[in-house]
Figure 1: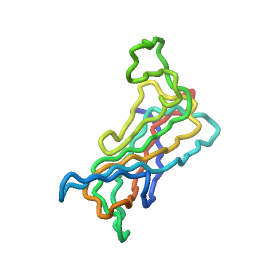
Figure 2: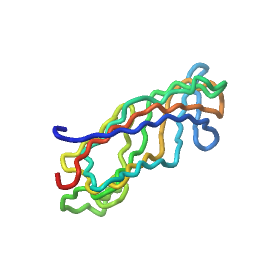
Figure 3: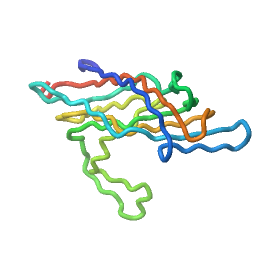
Figure 4: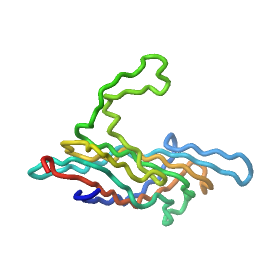
Length: 171
């Protein structure tokens, strides 16, 4: 990461989830589990006189229960948020075997630029950057944990900083 520049942006939000956004189940009197997905997108647009090449993104912070909420408390064990980096990704020539392709590998899909960053994998780094980046978009959040307080109701609080490592094109 020598000689790279960086900038950061903050996410601070909370939401109440219910219905199809959550799954809750119990396997005994004291074993209550939950899983949830939330969010559509938020976009940080890069502006300036030069394009940037992104060499990495880190996320620092947490997703927890919203303590100010009267119901919907949970213990969050794991979480991740989809981070889309626009631009041109580096490619290496190659082919993908058509069958079997159990994991549906696709080397040219736009989804190859979506990186789920979270509690246990909070960083992505590139030796060869994603070039000509115009925006960084935060997509869906996925979280899971134990001990839900209220059936059909989960409250989550995001407190995250994203740090983007870059160089200007041509540097």
